[in-house]
Length: 95
Image 1 (spheres, rainbow, N blue to C red):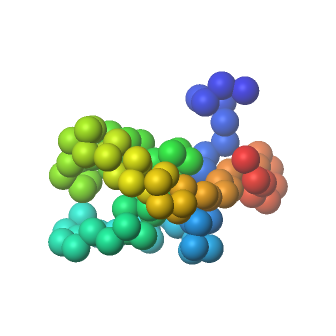
Image 2: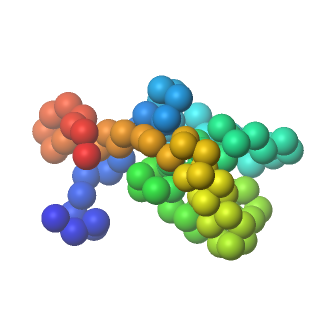
Image 3: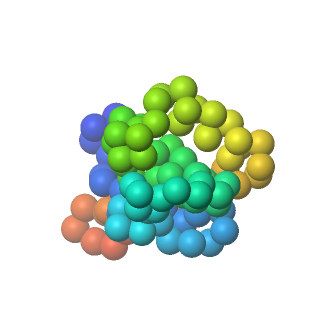
């Protein structure tokens, strides 16, 4: 199944167990970026909840800065998440 054919991501369960949705992402006005907030954004991007381009525009950062966030999240051990996708005609399933 290609990426275009995959069902839409409904939510992501972050490494700390938090449910991450588009609405629960940090606000674009966030001033103090703790690692856990960066991990939520990285999980949202890497799972397909939002695109990297959306994240860069929303959080006023370059693609290089996003990759730095991702590297730090991966090195911290917070790079674990579970993606829930919409299941056609039914309940979400784990992807």
